[in-house]
Length: 79
Image 1 (cartoon, rainbow, N blue to C red):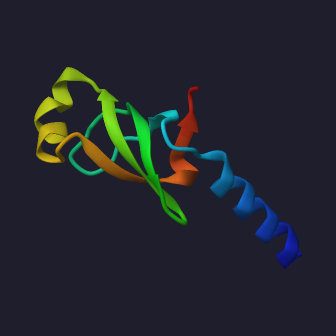
Image 2 (image 1 turned 90 degrees about the horizontal axis):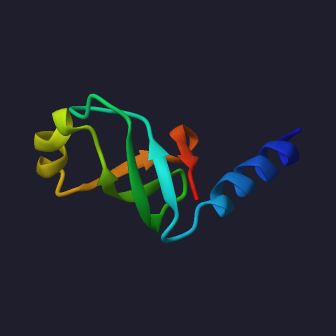
């Protein structure tokens, strides 16, 4: 059973590549989901450059320098 969990974790890790466009779930001060581009892949999360966001979140995105670290499990690949 541990082997199946290990395989699943590896598949999640390998599916994210640099430059991919992803849809991310809102968090913290960002009140709406947003679209970004993968800049760095970590073990359970990714660093995303925020490319598209709701105008209501412009201030929060600016405070984050248009970057966010998000969980892989809460991220959907667009392209």
